[in-house]
Length: 178
Image 1 (tube, rainbow, N blue to C red):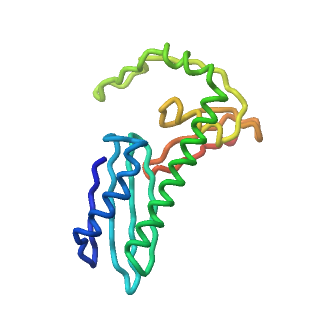
Image 2 (image 1 turned 90 degrees about the vertical axis):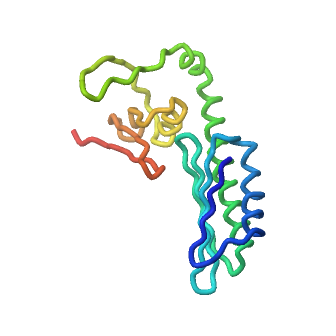
């Protein structure tokens, strides 16, 4: 994992840098060399604040903690990140188990080709069955398919909705009025 450490209003010494790299290296077992970690260390009044942002493929994990001691803030931040990663992994594994029949189908699907920007035309049509589900389940489906959006039939309202991945790593929900 690549680690980028920046200090603001304080100098990041060798001891702190080594401790940060040691703590973040525990995530190598999850992601290996695919991940980038950006660590910002700053001092505000008598508090030390550490912000860690990890980018893994299309996922972003972020945690920020403050404490009187920079090492305590680091420990708190790493604990929050580890909790986020475990929660996401468990959620995906549970949904993969629920939708295990999709694995073989998804493997059999050819990769879509990207069209040139100069020409805008429909090069592929796709039909699919709308299955009633809630927005949480739709987000899991979208993640499993590695798509940036997902259309579904909202089980609560009975309307066709769309969930999408925002640039800030969060999700959006489009609910049409008709």
